[in-house]
Image 1 (cartoon, rainbow, N blue to C red):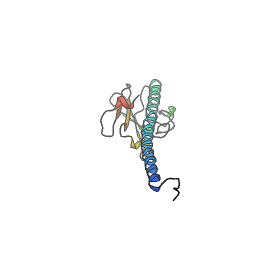
Image 2 (spheres, one colour):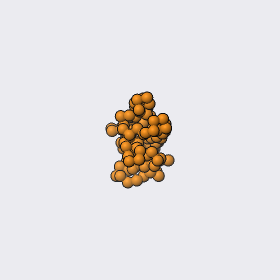
Image 3 (cartoon, rainbow, N blue to C red):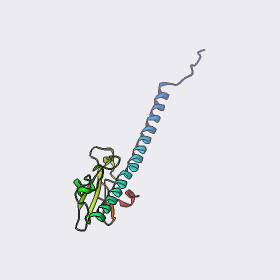
Image 4 (cartoon, one colour):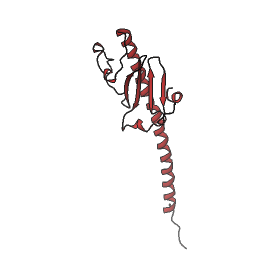
Length: 148
């Protein structure tokens, strides 16, 4: 009589590896979606800070800053005095443009950055009246989901 050895066969080992790989893939994708949603707050926070600086500038000088180049200029030089034209954590580029009544500040993902994969909230904007807008990469409005 032959004594049977205890242990796993190669087939059983391969099945376990496949199950772990599938679960890992699902977990990684879920984590990536979570990170995209969490990092959107960088855009909204930075836009609200920019809006606050715009209002301070308007109260002091009677005009809004309407060009992106003036974001980093000192207050005394007619700018907003912000540290950079990127968001606080560096995920979004900030821009300001003039409108007939004031300004529109916008935040778009940094080219080649991780947020560039965020198709649900591809761009954010806020106006001097406080109107917030967020668009999908297709151009469809998605403000309710993006500005929370």
